[in-house]
Length: 168
Image: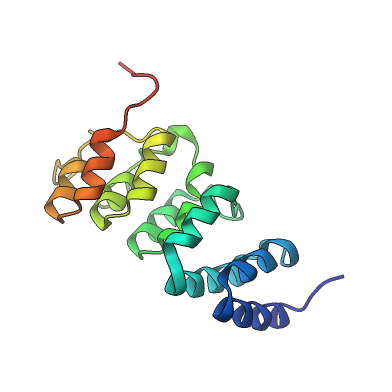
């Protein structure tokens, strides 16, 4: 049986206000991963407790896939600071596009490092992003971007990442 979206949104809003974990579980079990409902939930969850939500999502390895093949959508999410939503999509980026540059010459790793999001930075590195690749215009690596913004935790993440295999 289909649940009306308005009812689901209202139920999720109430769940998330009191218990983000319950709201997340409701979303995963009832909605069929509807993106509009998901976006509202993530926005509320982030304002409540982003680190716990991110940890749970990584643990559950939840992925929203309706618009994952649009590379510009991923870059748009990075530009607009919707990192939690982006975390759900990173693993689905094709390996040959993980280091693709946006119109500003930045890769997803550059955007994550510049904003100081260590979890996303590590996930992108694990997916195959090159931490040494410079931006197109500024010729700056992700590590340098993070250092300029005083994101020492991201610099440490990039420096500490040891790829399992090295490419020539």
